Amino acid sequence: MLYNTKEQTIVLGNDRFNVISFGYGEKVMVMIAGLNARDAKGKAAAMGLAISYKDFTSDYTVYLFDRRETLPENFRIEDIAEDTARCMKYLGLRNAYVYGVSQGGMIAQCLAINHPELVKKLVLGVTACRINDTTRRKIESWCAMADAENLKGVLEDYFYETYSEAYLKKFRRLIPMALKTARFMKPARFSILAKSILSFDVYDRLNEITCPVLVLGGKEDKIVTPEGSLEIAEKLGCECFLYEGLGHSAYEEASDFNDRVLRFFAD
Image (tube, rainbow, N blue to C red; front, side, top):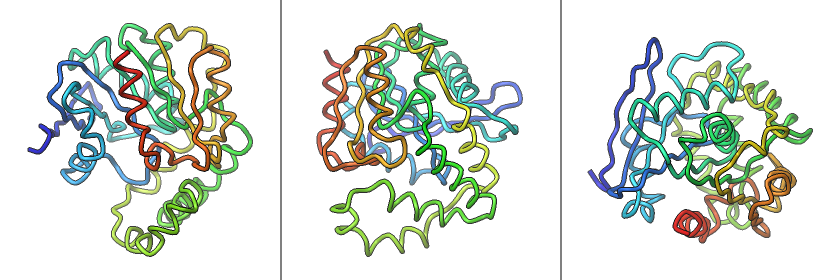
């Protein structure tokens, strides 16, 4: 397939994980996605990822692990990080370049803290080391929609809260079509994953991250706020760049976002 895109299922005990991989490179990269109303599986999702991150494919083989198929109540960010570590060890992936965005950045921090041998370098995009009042209000709002079985409302709110005005102006007419054709996960699954964010706090453990870290964010972020990025960078003393005029979807909108990730990993 294009860009050596593959799908597989890993079974570890009673847990099943969908895995997408792509790329031809000798270096291992683990990409940890953020909270989404759709599961990361299927040929369309795999090809979409490979095309979006085609610049990574020559030097890296990239892996993305979806959340486990069956979720328990009171699932935590730390649990998702442990699942990621289990999958990486099963596949023999160590000393990896790890790139996490949003909730994925929270998971990545836990992975680097608890399993430093698995992480060579770390990029944290539009994320935080603990939630603030803005994040809590937004997540609780999405959970309420999910509990009312309205994931279309979650996705619509996400579009308008995370993309810049310029982006919305350009693609506004396509949003209704995207909402109409989207294949959503079960609302209860989304609610469990969203609620895992509400208890997340690794601020006091950040100094346990020993690998090089790059923090990227948006100055107009309405979900984790730019302060979320700045707090991590200040605590770690690492490089941080915030995009002017962009918000929580800066990693999709900024034309040089992937270039910054690649340069940092290559140095």
